[in-house]
Image (cartoon, rainbow, N blue to C red):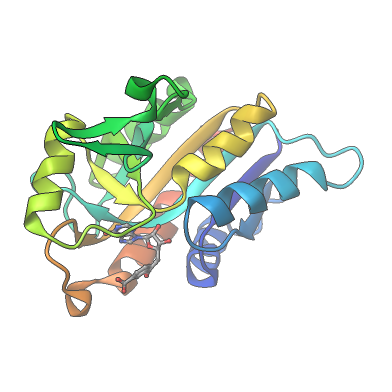
Amino acid sequence: MKILIMTAVEAEKDAVCRGLRGDSRFEVLTAGVGPVAAAVSTATALTTAPQGVRYDLVVSAGIAGGFADQAAIGTIVVASDVVAADLGAETPDGFAGVDKLGFGSNRIPVERLLSSKLADALNLAGITVRFGPVLTLSTVTGTAASAVELAERVPGAAAEAMEGFGVAAAAQSRGIPFMEIRAISNAVGPRDRSAWRIGDALDALEAACTHLPEVLS
Ligand SMILES: O=C(O)c1cccc(C(=O)CC[C@H]2O[C@@H](n3cnc4c(=O)[nH]cnc43)[C@H](O)[C@@H]2O)c1
């Protein structure tokens, strides 16, 4: 099995690689921040894979914001769904997603069996993990009102990040299964960059990735 892991930035890639301890089945690349960079970088990586390399699974991994009462700082979220939460239109009645507008879907399914297997393995190892929807947004949520609106619109929303849907779209276009793993660095809500615990989240990401080889064997 050959697995492509896409992170947004170098620090996330380093944490993932530390966790994987040189397992040669994994290729870890940085995609850049946001869904567009993520989709372009993933599609490029899939198209330009060395001859004979065929990826069986694509994973979006990194840090994320956690929704209140769903995912605390330093814990892990394994995506049960990826949701493009700002892809659509504002209307007088609120946000209408592209699915409501008739232009496709705001959701891409994950590889459910492996995702739940990973969540179970992390739980068994004593790592606090939530299996729930992960939102992809181009703009980091910065107010309590927006956080509440998103949580109401996507029941059970556990985390938000900026790349998952882009990575998933590229994988889906080639028929390759997809997973998303996020370590929580901050709470989704009022902007307070000084409260982000990026070091704790990267440590949690590394610890979670030590379990990927056994789960994906
Ligand atoms: O300072 C800012 O407000 C800011 C604006 C854009 C990006 C950043 C990053 O640090 C990006 C890193 C990476 O982290 C993910 N992330 C982490 N927390 C959140 C969140 O609460 N909402 C959305 N994304 C988040 C994201 O995937 C970025 O790639 C900072």
